[in-house]
Length: 405
Ligand code: HEC
Ligand code: HEC
Image (tube, rainbow, N blue to C red; front, top):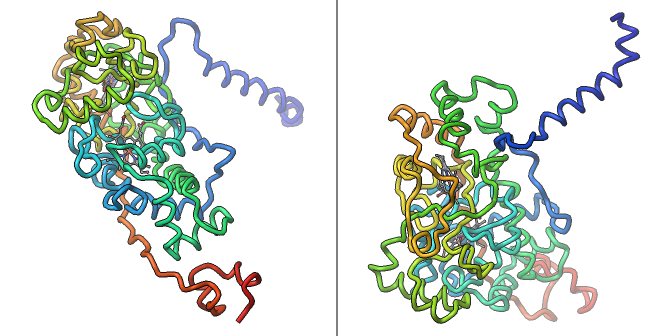
């Protein structure tokens, strides 16, 4: 083709390439689902990420002012050095309680459409409010938390910069935290992304073998697929009941309270002793014990594993799948264990390769120092303010009304 012809045909050539690339992403029926690199972070139209919001959100994430007794923050259950989750099998709870599930990592959650093990929160904004008002987590009341923010000059200033409001609104706190998660708690360009976009050296040979097993013999891909390595569907794998539910009084209190307040029928309330998961959303017994397929991108840093931290290491997780999963109260009672799991007969080398793949795709740790959070101040009576004082506490916009001094 002469150069002039190339120019002539370029649009057509580009179009063909575009169509071919498009077609490659469409799966023929029967093909296994695929892994995919992370796309740009999705943002809801009513909460565009800005620097002011994300910076404010970072402070709020670590600030106990927005929980009930002001002693606990998001960052106490999502500890940066514990994979932005918690290394306890079952999470700590609001003082005087324990939680009933494992604290998940917050890293990359901006990509998930269904949050929590039960998949019952639909956005980071809704999730943040649920966390800090929920009885066994933040246990805060919105008006008290809002009053605390309004008594903090630094927040008055920052909420105004981020949201243009005269005073902090508690709802905007959840928006700022979500913006922080979208801006800072994303793991861009990790080894899996680089591998999938053409850098064949981004994963070691062992991890590449692990990837082939993941997509082949071990069949993890059936549920752990797409950019977040989850189909966001629900399965009962037969993960065993956490022993804490039987052995520890405080855990029983939470378990009983959770299933009661979520509205379990009396007969089942008396019968069941395990986490009903998706059942709480659908009220179908066939959904009892089903949980959302867990995303796997930051997995190396987030032990222990499963909804109540039933397994401490990735070795234990792989052994569980190698046996074809397990049994729990619901699989026995309702026969609802997923049929996708089968014994895998993995060799020792194959298990190691799978673990190498999971560890390498976890990429670099996201490290962050816990910031110093702003303090309360006593606000002087507004009428007596000088311009300088008003500016310091962020009230200068009131001055026209009260007369300048
Ligand atoms: C008392 C401990 C505790 C506190 C405080 C807490 N969380 Fe959590 N977080 C958890 C636990 C436990 C889960 C899993 C809950 C479930 O599935 O029912 C979770 C789940 C999440 C998830 C869902 C992750 C996923 O994969 O779906 C996100 C996001 C999250 N928390 C963010 C936050 C934010 C933001 C705050 C503060 C506004 C916060 N959490 C406060 C313990 C806590
Ligand atoms: C049938 C769907 C399905 C298949 C197949 C599957 N998983 Fe899972 N995976 C899930 C679900 C659902 C969970 C959460 C289960 C729970 O906590 O009850 C999970 C949890 C995990 C976890 C724990 C995540 C965490 O944050 O605690 C790891 C690790 C994991 N799977 C790895 C694998 C590997 C490796 C394979 C292949 C050997 C595999 N899975 C096959 C559905 C599946």
